[in-house]
Length: 149
View 1: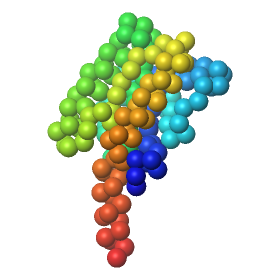
View 2: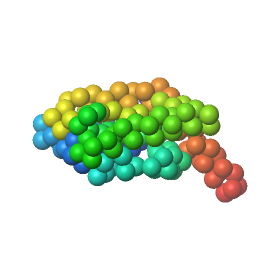
View 3: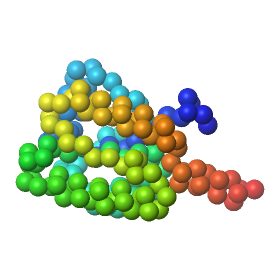
View 4: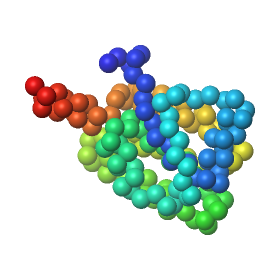
């Protein structure tokens, strides 16, 4: 699969009050982002455990984007600060496992920052395109082919 044909699958966990509202606004403004991006609304990014990030990558997501409220503006006080710590720890864990840490990213977006969210999504897609497909997905495909022989 060449870089030109590879369309990454990105899973974006967006907090309900800010980032998801921003994605909704992007739709109202008719701003488009690549179709391989799947947005999942969460009550707060602070509610996401490390397992969510790891499981997304393990199950074949080429990248994971966490989009929370602006720092100091979290509707659950400091949920996005907890999320930032978890994302930082998970990035270190991914790197230790031989998976590029750039496959996981966190951003802070307010409900009115639709253009910024779309820009971040395009940046994430470009980064993941340069990295190539998720190595775990490739390994699973090879293993599956070997089993079916």
